[in-house]
Length: 192
Image 1 (cartoon, rainbow, N blue to C red):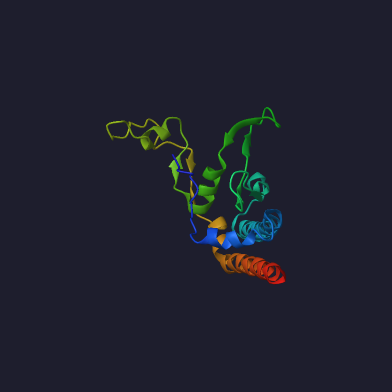
Image 2 (tube, rainbow, N blue to C red):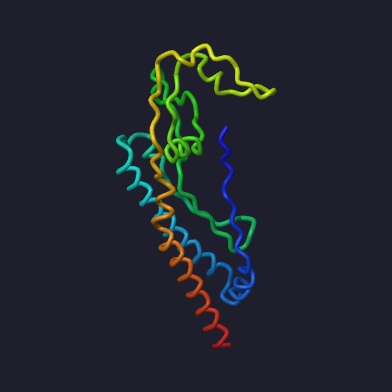
């Protein structure tokens, strides 16, 4: 099973910085942070779409589900989040063209595209050899060496390279908004 827990990053010292923003007002600060996050996730998302178009030969449902979103935290003050990834990717059964047969969790599809898939048998029972029993041994596989075979593919590094290539843009966007908010705080405190 793939561990799809998000990476958590804690930046210390931000509370003191935010404390000065109270003279501006929480609504104005959140509006500024939300606008920057919207711009950042759109920039990274467009880069990921461009990477997908150049590195993957098809542009079907997976491409359509490569999306981005941002939102303001309902629980914590001054927290704004952004996500770029694959959201809601159904497999469609041929009999029922509009009814999803099975949902594939988005992190799994993202993992396959980022890191690739090893060649493996698609025959009935072939997955059993990849499962491990409680005592640590693999089960006997009845179809591991039979056809049909999935040929596998190399990882495409779609999202990872989008994040890395836009790192300077993301950092400068947040640096600029912090400077802008600090200037407004000093202007308000200076006028008082």
